Image (cartoon, rainbow, N blue to C red; front, side):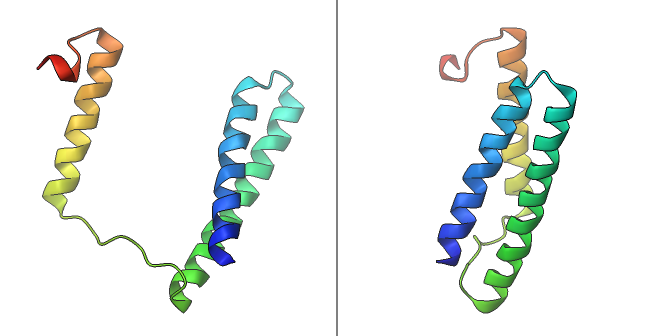
Length: 91
């Protein structure tokens, strides 16, 4: 049940992001941002409780080298996409 709530909240947060990006009324946009912020806090607080009770098991921590490798590849892919460089499959 806890995982269902976490999953539903995560989906809501994604929906808020889409609505916020398309909202042209500053007051309404701010309201959606506050709602999103509240849901993010709720989701993180629930996650911490679920992890402490063993309901939610996180993925193992990656090494610094693996993290750096992934970051580098994502940065390269983003630069190629923005700069019109060769696609990753062309290499």
